[in-house]
Every structure is written in C-alpha cells, then in structure tokens.
Length: 103
Image 1 (cartoon, rainbow, N blue to C red):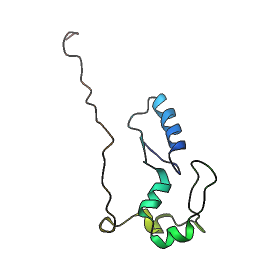
Image 2 (image 1 turned 45 degrees about the horizontal axis):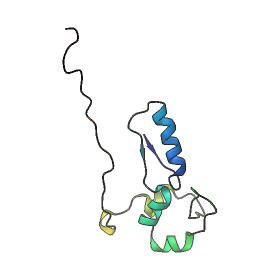
Image 3 (image 1 turned 180 degrees about the horizontal axis):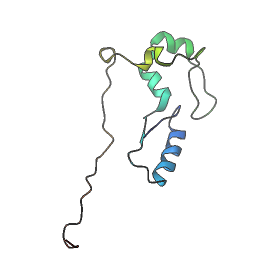
C-alpha cells in the first residue's frame, strides 16, 4: 500500500492507521506531492504555479485545471533528472520455528 499527501503529515497519519490495522507493506512517498513537483516539475510550471501555502501539508502549487497524466511531472524523463536513490526499506525474512513441534 502506497500513501501520499501534499507533504508527509497526513500520509504518516494514514500509515499509522494502516499499520495498526495489521496492513503489511505500507509505504509513504518521501516529501509528498510537493517534493515530487519540486523535483520533477518543469521550471516554467514551478515559476507560474508556485503559491505560498498557509499551513502544513498544503499543496504549494496551483493548477488551473486537472492535468492528470498529461502534466509533464506525472512521467518525468529519466535522462533529464539526476536523482540519487536511497533505499529506506529493509526487507525482513520471516522464518518458521527452528526446532520442536509436531510432525
């Protein structure tokens, strides 16, 4: 399960609820939509659409219409951005009982 919000505040809250309900493999998008647009948004878009947010976890960009997958930041070109990947997930291997038991 992948959760995200404008920053991370609401995503962390959702993550806590999901983990408390024993949902496995729950992940948060680092920095949320704002960091995604900061990183992958075109310079013209960031200049024209940037707004001052009035609180935490508020979107810092304004969209005059719904772009969806037509917005360039929705599928950034790998060759145009250099982003270092830092793995944050540590996979745990669950093992059965070592000894004892029936059969």
